[in-house]
Image 1 (cartoon, rainbow, N blue to C red):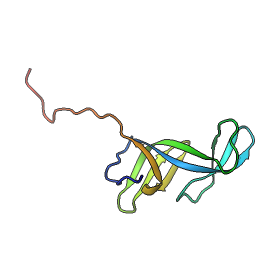
Image 2 (image 1 turned 90 degrees about the vertical axis):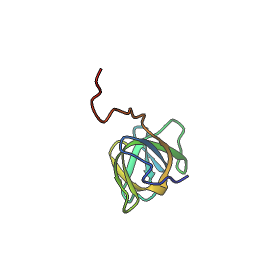
Image 3 (image 1 turned 180 degrees about the vertical axis):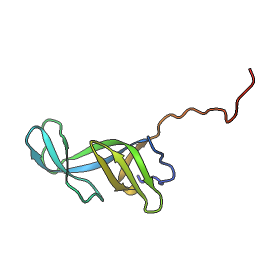
Image 4 (image 1 turned 135 degrees about the horizontal axis):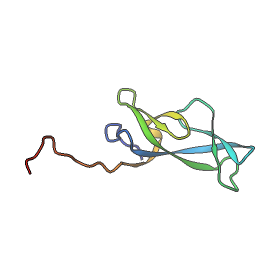
Length: 103
C-alpha cells in the first residue's frame, strides 16, 4: 500500500521490501531496492537465498513532497519513491501547549 508523502513525518519508521541478488561473505546479502539505483548490502538471516524478499526498516530523515521521494536511514541514507514504502509506523508525538499556562 502506498501512502501520501504528506502523511509521513520525519522520525517515522518505514519499511521497504528488497530482493536478495546474491549472498556475500560474512552473512550479508547484496540486495536490490526499488527506485534506488545504487548497490546496497545488509545483514541477512540464516538460510537466505538469492530471490528471497526481505524487509528493510529505517527512520525517515528527509521528505521531498515535490518529487514524492522519502529518505530513510537504514545503515546509510537511502532515497526511494514513496510508492516503494510497504509499511509505515508513525512516531508517538506529544502535544504541548502553545503558550504558558498559569498554575
